[in-house]
Image 1 (cartoon, rainbow, N blue to C red):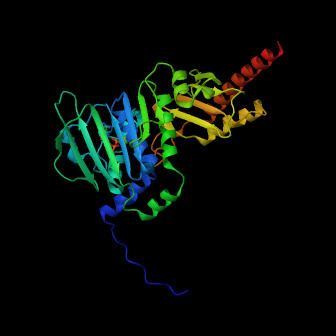
Image 2 (image 1 turned 30 degrees about the horizontal axis):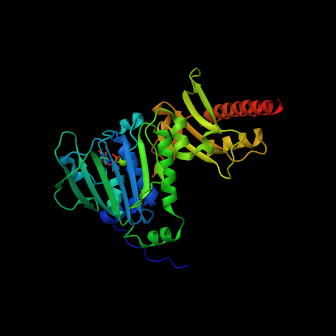
Image 3 (image 1 turned 60 degrees about the vertical axis):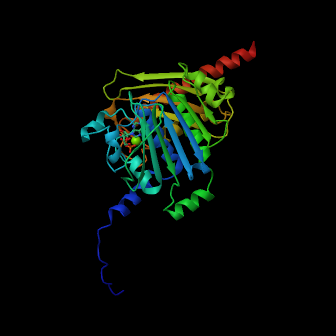
Length: 351
Ligand code: ADP
Ligand code: MG
């Protein structure tokens, strides 16, 4: 075929670049909720409350009692790459906070309307400011506020018609949001969480701060889950190749479910690891041939330099050094605990 004239290469407008990037970070309403709740946790909150209208498309509101945001930081709060959590690249290696890129709030302002109300310790009143496309729309207004920060995101994806349409037709993000808050609630047991549809009197997740993980699982996932759990623990501190600690709860042979629930935190980050999930499912189907899919809560702590947190735009996945070693260790612990509990049950059945 005859060669065509090459099309001219142009530099994209910042606003276009930012909206494209935003669409990747905030793929759906539940991811906006995740970013907001993680900000609340990073701010040292002991209470995080979420309210959602129209599955998050109309409104997402997250209120916390954390340290708040300084008045003088409000003008740049929602600009891209503004953060209080990282100052040099090397910090990423030891980062404890969930945020680090300064992109979440900015992204929300490119695909929705953001309003922030915040008060810092010792102040008599708070401030409210609204943002669009990274920019604060007017001077912060003084307002009444109790403690911490409330962020409202309205009309998510108002400027991304295709995205809005798919989300409106697709399955409910509200279910995903409830699921997300449930997961946070059983890991962060010293924080109380709630999640409700805006205006509803009943909340769909309601956890109170407790010292017992089991109590928290019972409150959030119900007795039928909690009474069928086995505690598991593993650590590997002797070998030079791997260094990790794992604690968790896994379901026993009495538990019944069609789908696996795997709540996984690695260094306090809620992440997914399909390789680990599959490895555990294999142990279940081999050890308990007729058993249902498992419920798993697992918290793994690794040296920060063994975890790369910056491999996924939504931070959904992290990459781990020595993943194979970890998987093997977890599999053997899960297998022996399952066998023990199944034998104990058989034994009880005989007497
Ligand atoms: P990141 O979390 O990666 O720093 P974000 O865009 O999520 O980026 O947030 C930008 C900054 O805004 C944070 O670094 C933090 O200082 C501040 N911030 C956001 N949400 C809150 C909150 N709920 N309470 C206190 N500070 C907050
Ligand atoms: Mg953040």
